[in-house]
Length: 258
Length: 347
Image (cartoon, rainbow over all chains, first blue to last red; front, side, top):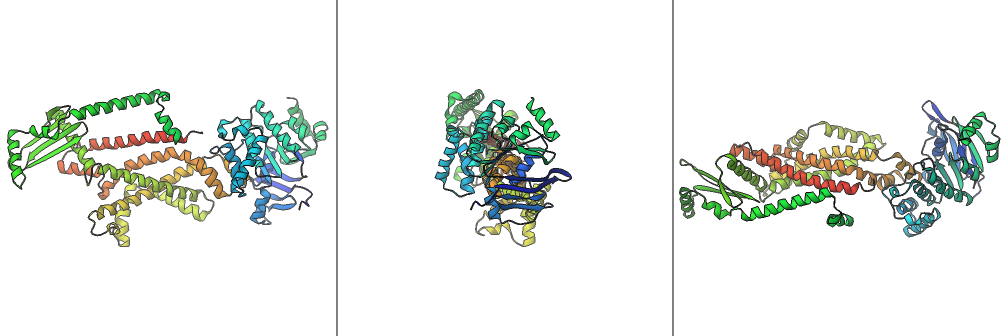
């Protein structure tokens, strides 16, 4: 069953908006349980890359494999190999996503937010889903907020609910798109703690972040992206302490010396 | 809903403005009660008639042919009574009763008040029961808005669909019905369609029914207004749907929800809250546009006031019509404000 080498693999992923090249030939191989932090200046294509993984952006060309199965293959803005909808949906659900702006459903309570997708998409039993949702809320430390509406919660609490909502679909890969950028500094800690716990449990994670401290603590690998390419890639120690690319050097210098 | 009623009776925590409004309303109601209790009765009014008129009325009682027309209208706190004979010896006597007193209504303020009471009474009471004209307007507006919202939602979903075969006709429909006058649309549906396809609106009903013509006209008006309102509601619904943050679509998609489920479970429930204020506005617009049915002779407030104008040759008849419309819209504005407040709770 699990006879794949890499849980997530992208080959030659490129993305253009008209003439503007956003992503240029990105290759990445992720092993199960790896935590990868993507850092880089704004406009480097970090978020676009993450979003194109679960089809929120349509890539111009490239291949994406999930758990060894082909998920997407496009060339020149056209899908080359058609993958049947069911397989694609199954592979899509292996990825959970958290957004910068949380994007909780404001008309539903915290519990309803979490239960919506498992019930509607996976057609699971309502009571079981509810129990699992409560366990997830316990895990992110918000069990007492189950029946609140999202707008009654602080940003940090909303982001933790968003993480629980993504986890409710039992994904194998979690994508975080700047999860702490929209938060007050004092609320960042709780969210990062939840993410650290997840990392320790062996969740495969791709995190676009500006939290260098978090990257230092949990990342197995760090990607430095600039101008649509992976400018530098390597272990934590190598990127932070011995960067080779001058772009990386100047970026880290400006970020770490603040 | 429960909390809505709870708030309604929770007098202690009412806002000052609400309290003052209620105090004023209750005072007005109390004054009205007193005034209506002491207003002269019908018999009192009839006793006011001059001796000559009294004799004529008495004579009428024993003969089958009536010489005197007696009109009596009562409008909550005021009543109005008129006696008139026709023919060579024409005599007119008009009285207004108010606060236990009876006034002559031949000229000045008395005449004006008398006419207003008479016209208002006739406008509301024309037809088989009292409030007939207002009932027709309200029925037409309510049904129209219902049809408009349902049709509008379908059209809006069609218009924003990525399928061109669906979106183009929906756009064309909306363009057509927003780009032509409602009155002409009404004429086309009431007159032109039957002429082209060879049917009559009254055929929808039993030929023995003497109201069939009016019922047919009502159906035609309902169709015309519904189609028109659908186009306007479609734009409201579309704007509301498109005003929902793109992140909501993305979150739903990332969770694996299909387009249909995203719309049904995430987007539309949120946009409903944004649709409520403009839909309420549309209802009030429709309420006023409903006056156009005078053009196909449906007996609403406007048609009746126009008929009174023609028969009485009196031009102030439109003033009570204005006031009736104003009272109806004020009532609905008040209701809609409460509804809007309720729907904007989480935003």
